[in-house]
Image 1 (tube, rainbow, N blue to C red):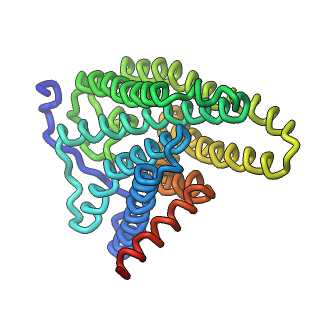
Image 2: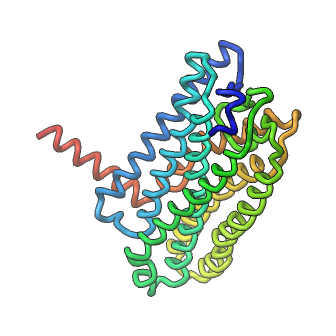
Image 3: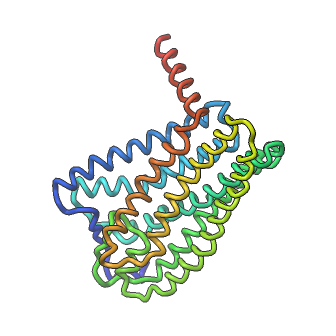
Length: 312
């Protein structure tokens, strides 16, 4: 850390300086964060405890729920603390740690969405071979690779971040530490870091993007051939839910990391950051899981079970 000793901390500018606006934002984001935790913990608990949900699709949904909880918890508590105390200073080690975990969970989610797309492809296009191709051993290996890839790529970004020194203005125009904003305030030429982002993100991101969307060409083709209206509706419902999550996630990330930040784009960048860091982790369980019939049945079953225990 000796190459970043010129200053000892950063100032997080946040979303607003107006007291009334800050109080309103605190209540809004506290509600969003609590709902995110409740819905994702609920999904994780249901998949863990309900035998009918012990299959690959819900195994990956449980991983997604855990990622969303972790992902949101990297940024939301710190932002809520700053809104209440109006203390917006963050040390450089804490800032870099936040960057590492934020990117770890974000990159892991990108790869997990690809794995979930592959799972849907096998389930719809090759249903007779589904149990063989998506055995528990295969699923656990896939999930392990997702987590390892997320942490490994984030570690590369973080190690390259350590080469930068910060001696100019220490104000970060956001509510948490993120790579594009740190590159703006460094007094070291960030060209190498930018090249690493474009090359590594371009290769892994493009690969994950193709692995996510390419199977849907075959999924939609197969779905159109299903004669049963119920089967066709179920297939399209699952696919559209997944695609909605993916489009929102990819769209926000492309704008934040691939579109250069200018003075005119600061507020728009903050908006997309809020969507990515706070709204997406809440939308995922609402769109992807709580609309699912099996999840709702497991939820009602757990509710009646708890009610019977209470009565007894």
